Length: 305
Image 1 (cartoon, rainbow, N blue to C red):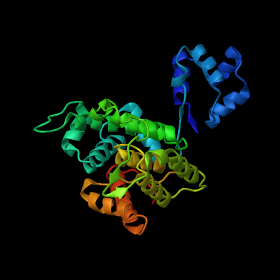
Image 2 (image 1 turned 60 degrees about the vertical axis):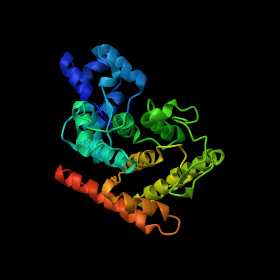
Image 3 (image 1 turned 180 degrees about the vertical axis):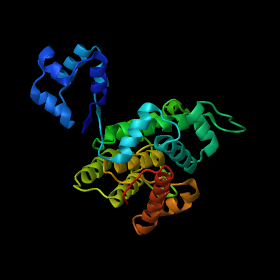
Image 4 (image 1 turned 45 degrees about the vertical axis):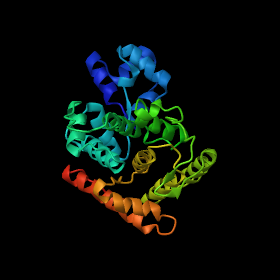
């Protein structure tokens, strides 16, 4: 679906009607009907209308998601509305996801960075913690922007680039920012995919996942677990993996989950034991979904669960 609120605003500003468009620039009645139904117009047609109205084509329409949560996030992101779902998702997910990985920033400091672009750092906060907090905000923005698109390797690599560019890691010759790892690594004493095997395993994972007709929360959790077992990047895999899960929940109209730092031991145990016992990680992620539901309830946003 497409919203033409911008077009209607521009028509009102110029003092013309949709019918006038047919006479002035030869727009067909079929095109007018598409506008009324919220159907997408060609870029060429949009540009013709924009030229006539004296505005940018991008102002005339925008994608409207049937997923109410995603639509709210996009509207609040565009308008930079404070205190809403977009605001709280940015602060809460960024704080928890970074803290799970060892960031020393508190939730209050994270909130201050998002809300005022300033910080009272206190003692011993690494510069990278601050950079990666700002980067995580931008990564969530990217997830919201591409939420409707099929998950791809390029998308996943771009998330890694957003998170890790300009950090200390990016100065290391062997650290591939925005690309798959070049050195073997382990996590929690567990072997992960060898660098040479990562491309093939990632292609296979995405091919199998994207072939599913109806994706459930359990499919997203399984995708997350399998991604973490591959561990395709030198560092940053946990944060990228949780961002991927957020994107796929938004894509498939599933209530997202936020893993709280206080639950990280259950989360790590769930990932560690996934191949033998899927219930632990599933329960932790469903608990994270309940965390998101409480946020929706606090903001009086209707939802189905």
